[in-house]
Length: 412
Image (tube, rainbow, N blue to C red; front, side, top):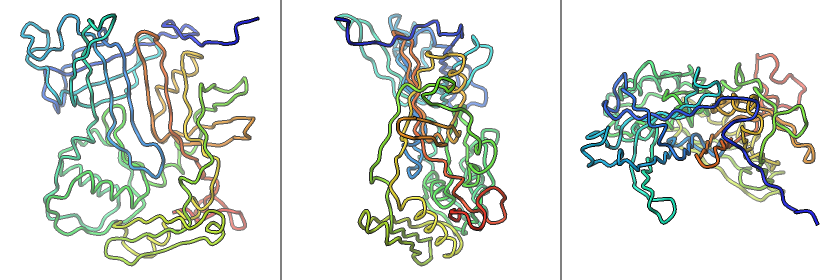
């Protein structure tokens, strides 16, 4: 009787002759926010890496990105009290960290995570637990921004992108580390602010705009306004993943047909305004009464708040088969997959197909997870996804986004 199981292996020498390199650096010797860090390359000691950036679903806020780096500590280099260590006396929290990867042998690198040490925790592994390790836990700049309180005369009525820029100015975020869209929403003036959490105000701007605000892998603050996904480059799928031979392959796919994001009673209230509602009787009959309430938004009129309510109702009133995520093992087809798993960032649009489920659609990347360990040398990437339903929008005066007579709904 033949052995009934199959196992998948991936080796350090990637298929197709690709030369992968992972660079992990810590700026022990320089101040955390120095303009030009002095990097110490700790790549040789890295035993595993885990990176998490983005969000699970488009309705979520993007939380601070995290990275966990496990370092071999046989020589005691990462003990804070080891006066003979190469990095003494600079083994401290909040030191800047960088994780990059290359698929061309180090000729060019993609930044996957830039952040700051949150903690360093000793562990022991190996046989008998005698191999010293140091677990370095990091978060990106968003955590630091969450500790900043705004105390100023306030902000005037202005576009959402301008507001984000002004807040970043007030918290001394470097102008060269920003990629900020103009914004589609005009925001209310705030009046004087006292002890207003800076990141919370930025989230209020994001929630009003219905865009996304995140730290990219290089440590830049990026703001995509709500029109960004309707324009190049985010309007075009950058890769096709599927189960046909000519398509890029995924290792795993996570689907759900559930009621988690079904809403048929939408209530939106701007600061100082009246509640605006949108409801769908057919959806209530099919799924029961399911409410979604958004309050304290910063748009300037109730009419705009009503537009948002109608947009959210059209998008979430019906259950659909959701593609939650795909997982990719790049070593299975290194020349094709490594440039994609290392190069695609939050917001990138891809096509995903699964023939047996009649699944064939476009999706935007909402979350990114990278995992690698030295024992297996397998690089796994998981993308959390949301449906790219641009073809269903009707944008007045914009060719290609629904025409009169189409079954399209009005975009917000």
